Length: 316
Image (tube, rainbow, N blue to C red):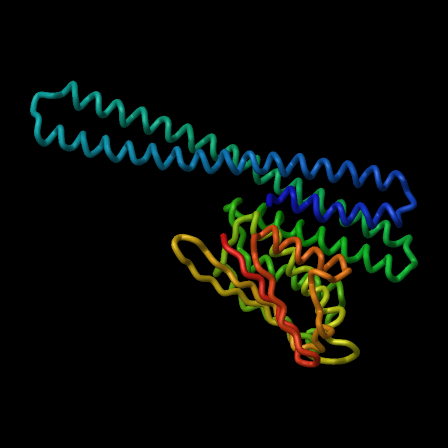
């Protein structure tokens, strides 16, 4: 599934929540406009990413031709004397290819600047949605409804974080996954006012060790957002102390990258006979749906009093 489809999934849940609780028609119209604007920007993003890939392939082809012409030029000079016209023709060909390469490089640079600006605008729009949710939630007094607003705001912020990382990066197609997950964990720790002396979060994915493309990193980030939120809220009731560990195992088989993303805690565990596909909570439904979008597999191991372990297996 594309990133735009993932926006649609999250905003469908967001609209359903707001339509039930928002009293201002103006806020709803603003949310609809923001949704359409983000989808438009996402389509531009996908087109530019496709253009960048084609341009990089073209540059590679040009370099191959330049190398071949240079070899022919050398061979002609070594074996043929008095063939100045032939050598001049080869040199002209090399010069022409060099000019085309330079033009392609300039064009690619311009597109990268535009792509960077798109990521910046998407991030700003997502932050605007988050601010809208924050303002709207200030008028909500029901604790359950307020919790739903907070959860929706967290999901939007997890998407904004990835666009911020891409905006600040020189690589617009791959995300430093360990760094991205650390940002999500830090943000949620602040949101839920987690005392690091009571609940420790250990991210074993070293910064720079794993890089994922945008279509894979975004659903993974949303999955981590849902799992960590649930663990912070339910795994350690009262003053119970504990630990949450995030890790990723990577192997490559026949040029295909396989990943096992693992999030585990040593909390109170899930209820007996828990089935994620039958869960009525939006968070668990999102996890199941996002794993399906990755064409992945979700395994949950939990024993009462011994903690819970989420294992998400997928390929890229």
